[in-house]
Length: 311
Ligand SMILES: [Zn+2]
Image (cartoon, rainbow, N blue to C red; front, side, top):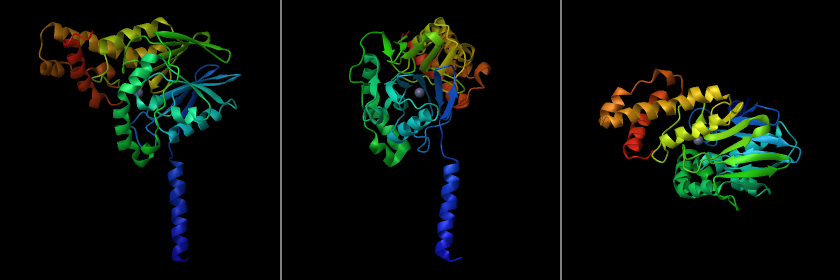
């Protein structure tokens, strides 16, 4: 075989093996109309289009309601393909539940195709507040692909804490249960099938991250509101879909633990460093991915929030 032919063959084989490992959002049906699109549980990468989160969609006879649009046009296109793998219905509406990049920076891709983008006003406000930071970080992850990301906001954001949406024949409730992982995070409730698409209020499989802009006490209170809905199916912001028991195990109980344990240390005037040491182990949550990397940081951050009276 001539060298040039060998090089071509090698390139073909290499291309085939790379595509064999290409990133795919997993499609998981959770009820008659509702599906989850589960991204990587691990880190954001260029290959996964920063989709280390979970999205969802509802299929109606008049079109698909997509919840979350991904972080870049490539990810948005992949989302579109995965939706098309289960229905011929076109995506007609995109609902944004949060301000974090991979929940909404694919909006532009869908808006260009005539899809209506829907969000609460307070979600849009948070998107605008965080967009510069998210674009910078996307650049680090996606490299040159980040240049194609164009922020696009819901053109008629909805005022107030909740909105009733009629999309196709579906009656949905878009609701802000209080701030959580990010300010302005919201959830979508589909009562007939008791499905809650809860965005970053719930993490399954991996540990929730308490950030400086998160609010651990309000997040904990918001979780109680989600539980009060008594959903049968929860599509989380990260991880596989599940029931309320799983959400309680992976997120609700952890938030309650932080508020209670760190809150008690703050009430006792215990120092920050001593508190982080004392609460460094939380065996009930060791099963969560990134526990080792995040737990101490979460205790630290919760302490700062609870000490400053942000509760
Ligand atoms: Zn997230």
